[in-house]
Length: 238
Image 1 (cartoon, one colour):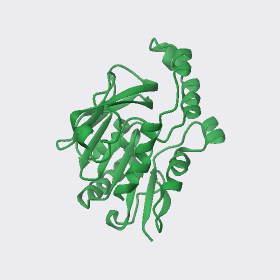
Image 2 (spheres, rainbow, N blue to C red):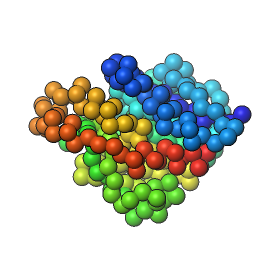
Image 3 (cartoon, rainbow, N blue to C red):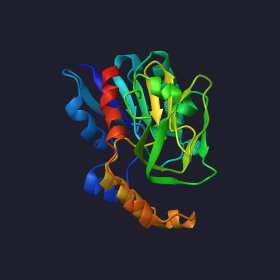
């Protein structure tokens, strides 16, 4: 039976896990009802072992976020890079999110590192590029749409063949495509508004330190149905 694999690269904050579920559970909640007949969902924790199955044996791959940093090169993260390269070569459908976005870019010879402008957190608007407006996954989105974001690192240098599909004033690389069915996004389509608020509550001190108003960011959180819809539309490509 074909399997869509969620590669888990980290854990959410304990209070988020307790109230809303861990990263992989947030994805499962969004994907389960739209899963094609005969397809299963499974979870691999990349921190425990590198996937052993051939990428070509899978229906597709989703890579979660993490509180780790790609530039710090955790051994488990580095070990995953050759597997991701093989998945790209095998044209396996992939969607990387946040850490997954940065890891895919780094695996395909780009550079992910700390953003010089600091952290981006909250519900912010993202804008499609011309390529994004014509992309098979993104073309159904409005040109500008809100998305939940929380990241200190970004894709700072594109892989050679990557196409930029979305950007905003903070980050020039909010969404990328690497091949016919391989995408990654800096924003969190799996987050709900309560999860985003919980992240902002935890980040109050860090946000104040960089001159932002946590209360204003929290009050600005709202649902992001366009961004969340990407997960279900991705299933059309697996």
